[in-house]
Length: 559
Image (cartoon, rainbow, N blue to C red; front, side, top):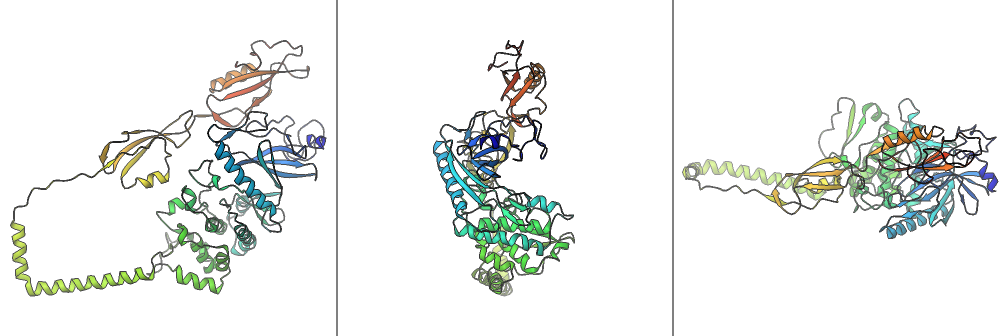
């Protein structure tokens, strides 16, 4: 069993032939996977699963290609690894949780475990990946699901000349996805990350849902790094207090349908909050049935209370169900007035949903009647008592006006240091203060966190006074060169130190087949971007006779 895993390519899990690289996918024979990823060919479940290359890293974990030796097939392995609060040393399997984050880690791990166990219990859904195993090991949680030959829906759409597909094609591909979402919602599962990148177009011609994650990784300003796909994440996901529900996935699904039919991403929900419009180019609007446009309007309303609430209702609208049409006409009629004029003769504007009730319309009509009555009364009073009014008003004009004092409205300067500079902060103070951002690198403070403010908190300033906020850009990054292995150590060391990396060298036993002093491997992975000052561990081939290399530095010590 172990032998079978060791003899497979970590890049595609096909059997290796000889000592060279993989003939199928081109993965080189010497290929290492640095921290925080699991080491290549690491063994899980007593050797049943062998770990291959990392495929994707998200807010709550890492997905690997793996090999299931028991069933003799490649699978996908999802490891709970919240990078915002955990780390891993090179070559290790266990995680190190950041001090003070232990309870958060435990809560998120429990949510991760429950999510994937629910998915494992679901069977027979056409658009759902099959989850086969969920287990705990190395102090964390792993989920195993089928590996399918596929491409993302975004890549599939981009293969076409227009980057989009017809409604008939979209209906055939995406309606099973909508049905599967409905089943997930019935089981209490919200995806919160539906997008063209998390929907897979598979070799059998079906679209399947992937990219599941816990809610802490799909909400801004939470404890984990948020995965929000601009244009597809709903407005409530951008606030820590936002209320999520089926309507959250409905917004994302409708945005995917919009992208599939139009060929471009919709504007983000935060931007649409201030300009709630959707634009459909005229050449597409003529091809899309009116009931589909109506369904998109209702499902992509920015504010959750105005949005289509259930998958069943959206499915009915997309099928032009008479019940759904009547409900839409009753509750989501566009504002009265002439039809909107196409923008630039090339786009048609889809109006936002009407938020006023019938009572509000009646109040507006009453206000108009009262205003007309006042105007008529004023005209009659002027005709009957004009002389007296002029005499009285003239007396007021000729009076000596008393001196006035202009009062300047002030506001207290709030404590902003330590907060995140984001849309919520700007909205909180948009009518009180003018917040100006100045960015600078900081080695330890995360990007977006306010380092200092001027003036300081506590004083009083005029309304709309400018507060200058110094905001962290995070650590300054450098790219680790990708052509390190095999080069002379002295040359590599000079290059890395010039890039502000801290080099730690160790010698590796040499049986005489390798060039002494040449670099064997580097951790972290070459080609990635890392903060300046990051320690780079360089393994160097030693002398065949075991004597220390000249100028190579003591093993394990900074050179």
